[in-house]
Image (cartoon, rainbow over all chains, first blue to last red; front, side):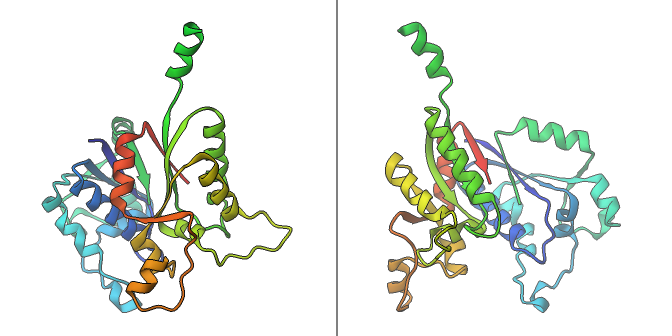
Amino acid sequence: MKKLCILFRSAPQGTVKGREGLDLALLSASFEQEVSLVFVDEGVLHLLKDQQPELIGGKDYISTFKALPLYDIESVFVCKQSLAEYGLSHGLLSIPVTVVNDEAISAHLKSVDEVLVF
Amino acid sequence: MALLLGPFLLLMSKFIIQVNGPAYGTSASVNALRFTQAALMGGHQVVCVFFYQDGVYNSTDFSLPASDEYDVVEHWQQLAVQHRVPLVNCVSAALRRGIVSEQDANENALNHWNVSQSFIMGGLGELITSIESADRLISF
């Protein structure tokens, strides 16, 4: 068992990075790895609720984030500064997250075995 | 001899390499290839090279660079043969991008396929089990 951190730094629309990151996160968890998620930069936009990616030909993979507890993924961290830059407050987010500062993210990345950036 | 061998063995690492960029258009694949070659030359072990996201575009036999251009796909194939390093595609990432093996073509009633014999169609599960057995994952 390894500690894997999946870091989302790309917006949910425009590329499929976030979707392929989420696929990897869920699969890692089902393979009994200790998985944590970190959202920074444009990646925080994954957390905005009531998105409709079908309208632009995308798949609504974002709603799958609600299934994280079923996969025992409990460590979900969001960069406080990135949230502020995109004007997002806690009430606009679709899933429970822990809002943390840069130092906490840095410490977390040091504490895991591998970091995969999407 | 034992004195020389001892520290040498300690420096051995088991790597897994992840390639997320295509054969043409970004430098990810060439950088990954050069790192893999350097790791092997340095006596390290490479458990496998896993192709995910746009990295699956490295596995097509239908890429035809001009004759005076560097053929990264050919070099991956040579490396796999010379060093017996498995080249593994994420099959779901591949199928979405039109990267199809002979078996996938048969199963989906397609007349054509494009995945080189050098590549194995695998799943993310193989990436995870390789990460578990390796000392370090390097992503490009």
